[in-house]
Length: 147
Image (cartoon, rainbow, N blue to C red; front, side):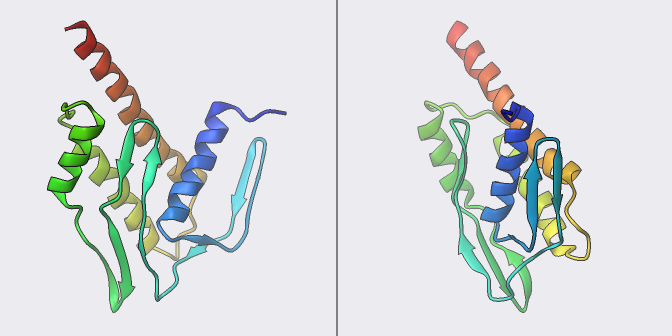
């Protein structure tokens, strides 16, 4: 049985969380059912990561550091702008920074609350943000093409 687009999107979300440095102690995904135990973060975790939601989103300016507490370097706004300029033919939707920050700040908030197990609804909420962003960009470019 083939996965639906919705189920593939859920798997993509798991990939996004893994790229944030999460390791799942137990993960199983079968059609119509997702279950996993609490994720954990390695105390010595230090990683740069790239998240690509092709062809709409590419972010590679975050650095996560786990040491005496947890901190996140704010994205380099100028680097994000230059990346967006190149990627979107010199046009940037005004909500670009907002959707990026909203999505990943929420992800980090949940990572920090490690006592709470991740839920399918949380994974879907991340994907919903990316989906809305993708659809808005498609609409943006369609309007640009007709202008």
